[in-house]
Image (cartoon, rainbow, N blue to C red):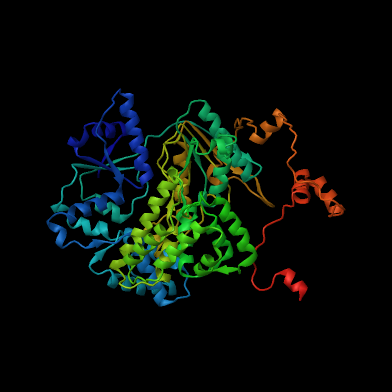
Length: 626
């Protein structure tokens, strides 16, 4: 049995620095970062200004570090090379596609996850359905294609065989492992092992209900701001299914924390909260532009995408030709078809000479067609450089980090050279699109006092106060989510959490108990309605007393503007004169004036009209003429 350390005993050993040769491994990166922050705060509280950084890292990173140490030792010649996650995914994608091209990309993700579960939980072969039999065939093909190489799922078993020839820490501490798969257990037992769990906090718990999920998120944001103003430095807000509600949550918290956050004067001002879950890399404007430009360089795209590229700030000389490119876009809407290729766009780009020159450089580069993934990565990079990417204006911090992540995507494309010697443009672009869509990215920012987390990200963390939302009888405990390519009976027998309704209920009950002891103040909340459905509280929080939670009444920025009623008036004599003759428009002029005076003025006096949009075939005007 490994020794059990308290948090104080663990910090005492870490204070000795590298001489103690203590390494701490955690289940994930967030817990490692949180423990690092706690240790730093502990050292600062002692009055220290300098100390040795402790050796804290996720268990997966620890295994990879051992592999790197072995790679540069005498074992290096016999050691297989480690596949990157993108290379693994590409292999599974090719195997599944060769079997049935109708299968969706999600099948490859599920296969890769099944391969990891099989090794982590020691699931052997057994009877199963058609999906599990197909996965068994694909697994053999995957093993054949990766002969002489290794992936993350099999790496712990490989390194366990070579630990005797490697330098190991005197003590390895497993911190905050609630569930440890057999593979991880067997690997860690090869070391002098100790365990440590976060300290429990005995605080007050309350249960609260709100009219809807929207009111619930608004209340959580106001509660968090109130606790921040009280001087709390570690505030947690847990939101189940955070990936689905991320945009709404960020919008509500931004508005509550800093009214008027979206005004130009406050652009770039850091907000006091951090969301644990990032967005797909492809959703960032800089990456979205790069992918669209690469596609336009080699094939036709819809007019809306070509129009977006023309007006993008990431194209060379965008600021210098801002007005000209706006006029070009208006001209394209009248003269172009519903799809455009690079040649058409160059021919129509006379009003913007700098744009045309950049596109001509791109066109010259597209005359050559690379053959390998590495050549395509260099070709794409040269093509973007020719277009003046990422524009002439200075990038802000988020855009700078996004560009670095985009370069990582090109690097992952070049690494496919180990798996495929020949690559077409369609394959290269498809890989980049898939990689950017699957990669969740969030630019780094200073540590914020308010942490917005998903369910699993909150496990093991400690706060001054914690709010857990969305705990309805339908949402909590979570539904069972077994992997479709492994027999459910085998997953249940292995003890995989969420493999069955029973296992999910047990694990979620354990998480609920953890939350109760994660902060001095804990609020469990749930919405009463969603559209026409009524909700009840989760059975896992029925033992928590329902108490009123003080939510401050914080006015919105628009309400503050309305209350101030600061009016400004001046004479504007620059409008165009009213043309002689009858005023056209009939009763529509009066209707627009009643609905919005500014709209009536813009439409009937200034002649503002919506921009045209090219359509396939004949437009309504041509049809009418025919």
